[in-house]
Image 1: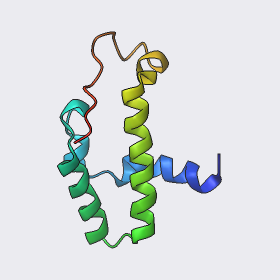
Image 2 (image 1 turned 30 degrees about the vertical axis):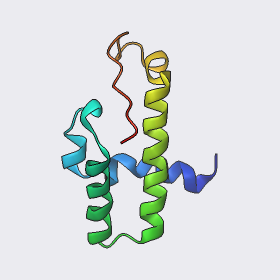
Image 3 (image 1 turned 45 degrees about the vertical axis):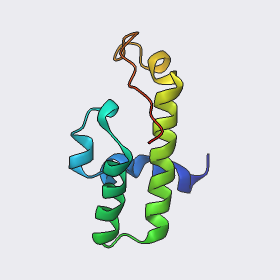
Image 4 (image 1 turned 90 degrees about the vertical axis):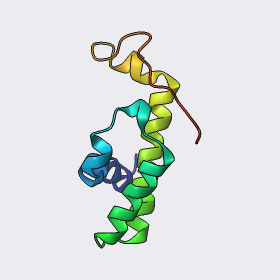
Length: 88
């Protein structure tokens, strides 16, 4: 993994607005994610940084929807509690 990618992935939680962090994963829609991008741009973050953030966030949701989250974190996730993965 490239150092820049590793740092970008680490920054996801720090950069994610609290309004998005407060939502249950299953209730996150494209609208909330778009708002998060707008907040980051309005706070002065460069567009390239927001693009890297978007990529890291996308990978996180892809990992969550793949079911790997259930296998990787079985002590935190229970079978049948998988978030609904939408494409809206």
